[in-house]
Length: 443
Image 1 (cartoon, rainbow, N blue to C red):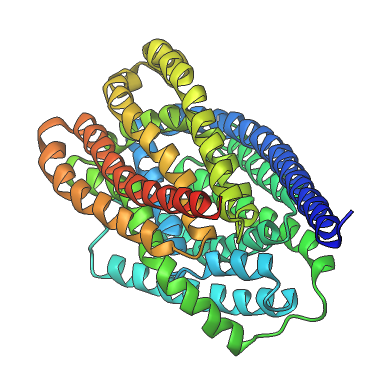
Image 2: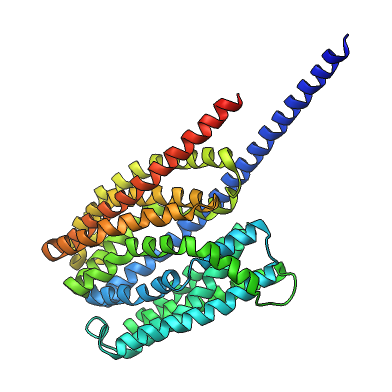
């Protein structure tokens, strides 16, 4: 045998071994991802049932107007998480997954930012209430005070959960989520059904569940730290550099999903929001699967290249396969479920429920694509998609809500979500074409 033939055979064996090893690694990663998606999916199913039970109790105890006022009040902590985050929550997951900084420095910096930004945002909301901007929707000052108190707590909890995602402690993440909703349900039962505190009890239950989840999340994260908490200016700057790319998408994304909750009570009253909130709760039941996927996909697809894209393709197909029968079941049983569970006064919510279903499908696919672009360091795609959705949605809300009320809000939401998905899909299709061309060229 000639020497060059011998080395050619050796090179071929080495190449085959590398290909086999790469294939094995891909299968193992896929199996791990599916396992964590299954665990997270189970968590989402449990939290959905617990949240749904709490929602039924809230709707029956507070009535349509009270349910709408509660939805309006808890909107403020959610907006604080987006407007006041500066995109730092995604930076926490990103840098934790990459190991760019020690976990003690990441956690310490995140806590300082959570307290500072939460306090600033709370002061802004209370200032607006003081000059009378929100008094028509929230006539009782103590209710607004309870909602504002949750802002820094929600921010800190969000950061801790993102650290758990970054270190791939999805099981712990799931336990914290279940505990939070379980405490919330138990508190709702005691404070609304036993003590009869009404809206004040609902807000206290919301606050108590956040505090318990924060304490438990810290209990699990503390052993993961490699020292005492340290504020790291370098990590703060790096996190904000990444965050400012994510932040516009986070803000516009949350606004595109919740601007309906903000505009509807201002234009149609809190009773209309109560109807719409119940319809949204039913429609979003089919978001369990994409929510579970997004929790896992962001850290799993960092620097994963074409393998991560194949994973996204599989989960998009899976979401479509789950949504079609799930959405059909919700549409069929919707009229009966609304009356049976929530009461006769919520029967008009069926129209908004049907109007929301196409938008919920678009939103579920959009959330999966968002995890891909964030993991690939391209959060501006998500930002621009959310900007487009919001630019389409706000005029649609302003035209549809005065004419059709909650039904118009549902139609406008579906149009907004569809516009966002179309933009993200265009960029995703381009990325697939580039990977395909590179693969053909290397072949």
